[in-house]
Image 1 (cartoon, rainbow, N blue to C red):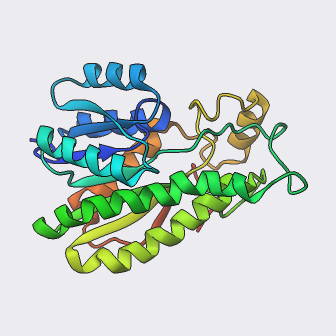
Image 2: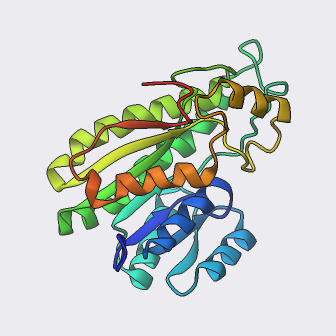
Length: 253
């Protein structure tokens, strides 16, 4: 028996990239995995087929409360109510410093677009899952952040502002959900080699980050996924409201 046997894990934005790595990590440890996707149906279905009978793909735009509620109901019918939520979904974004908007062209709508998925999606998911968590007196929520909040080496204003707001919600939600036996934590990565979002990043940037990192390499999606497993596991039962930065030691706090 592995750590997550008999547990249902919902991973948002899991059809590809980091989300897919997180889904694979939970499946490896025995979980029933609900693979949420918005547009990447083919990739999500392929991942579900790869992971086997204890995985299935569920379409929902996390910014739509009704769609989220419907997805949670469908997951509950298939696997049982989720014990663990990993909110990884990301609004369309490319880490390309040369093509990013500066403050001279940035508009509030750009920030709001990112926040709608990062923060609004988290709110919708927590609201949908809260009754299930309350009924069993336990639950785990893990949000995905970024080390750019601590070290905005490239000023992606919209993305970083949304993730900073998600960190705030993570901490306030931890306070609010704690009495229900629910922990809420964040795992923040640096630039990952390689996801769809980082595919536009020049190799020279990856090399520069590796040179500045104590471990001498850029973090992989699989390495970050292992940290998510920790927060979802019994060994993190007394840890909540925390932000763990997983970037090979590039930044702290």
